[in-house]
Image (cartoon, chains in turn brown, cyan):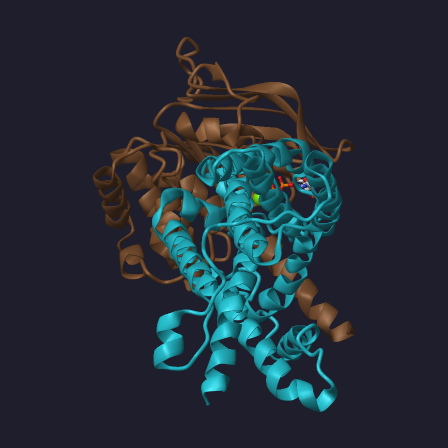
Length: 276
Length: 297
Ligand SMILES: Nc1ncnc2c1ncn2[C@@H]1O[C@H](COP(=O)(O)OP(=O)(O)OP(=O)(O)O)[C@@H](O)[C@H]1O
Ligand SMILES: [Mg+2]
């Protein structure tokens, strides 16, 4: 049916199987999410605020445990092995790193120090470390000029680049990228997605990215899943999804009658101001 | 003038000893956001253990490394038993826990080694340096100078450790954002053990120096209270801040005692640092060198 799942014989690179997540022992957030990423692909998880995108990524990277969230059902396999009981440290060593939503740079460390911490799990010589660093600077030339500034004082775009660069320093084969477009100007978003594509093609890094910005995400992704209320409600080739009428209507803000929803929102806002 | 210099230098040198204690606080606060109330107890525990082993007949060259090994065991135990189950709890909870830890460590030290005051001889005499006394007429204790030298080396080593080494950088990263540190594979537990181990080492050095000067006794735990104004002055997160803060507190309390004391009937030394810290708190709450709270809007 589609390129992602066509070869049932080939085991997926990352395989998330019917995962259920409960926060604080009572809040059921993921109600059985299944998805997979084939090696070398860019896969997008799309959905509105609170749909459970970040939770899905964190259940894969096992960062959930630090937030009082529990995976109560299901399994996660990475390169054919169960990984849901591992620590983030183990996962990074195996080649999977998450770039968290909101970037989370180390604000009091310089940009370069941020990058260097990314190589913590690798036992490499000074020379190799330097090579890795140069490679990251090749992809993000902008970071090289800001290398000795405190990350906390750099722009949002530079912080996003620092966060991705820092993850790259771990030499991952799979990056979980949460909301890279958050709060950035369209031009910077484009720049970052171009680099993601570049990394995907030249470094063979697979990506699973969560995005609210459906338009951009579908343009760069190979495959997409649409999440709603903790369930996958639709999946398919990125191109198919982008041209699907329902997706257009609900997530791209376009329906056959033009950008109706957008205008409605504006109208509503205006009225509210009048009433206030 | 000579007398002023003498008081000033004496104050600076004793200030370095405060810095040493404050340093232990800073290390743990930086890496785990925990205000470790037990740092004073650790100073006491380390000093008492070293002296205890020494009194049992071990040479200092053996007793001190052995004590260090025990401090590392303590760090591992604290991480396993106390910190790990309390991950993600509020800061105030962890603070309370370190208060509990204080009583435990103090009790443990006394249960093992008894409550009597012990003398510690490091082989450095607390006498005025003859050279300075003869040529400049200033009486500066030889012991104080050695202590200052040791503190200086320790601080320089720590500064290099934090800025140049992989583990040092990771420690700062964890201090900044432990979720992000986790996400790139830095194992928090390992980092905590290292940090408490280093704090244990600093406590040991401070304990030996203070112990040699005032005797190893329960009162050593109160030294920790003197570290408080130092921290407020220097900032809770700054290694250089702990040093400079210590120097300022040390010098100003001695100067205040000698030059202001007579007018108010003396006894200033005890409370002057706190007043200084309080005033400072009003002007610069993050301390002299404390990391500015970065806020981009
Ligand atoms: N630590 C937590 N404790 C309790 N509930 C949580 C926690 N984290 C997330 N949730 C809840 O889980 C649901 C899904 O959150 P999640 O962050 O995964 O959504 P998202 O799709 O990433 O949204 P966004 O686009 O806003 O980032 C939300 O309703 C949220 O309130
Ligand atoms: Mg999210």
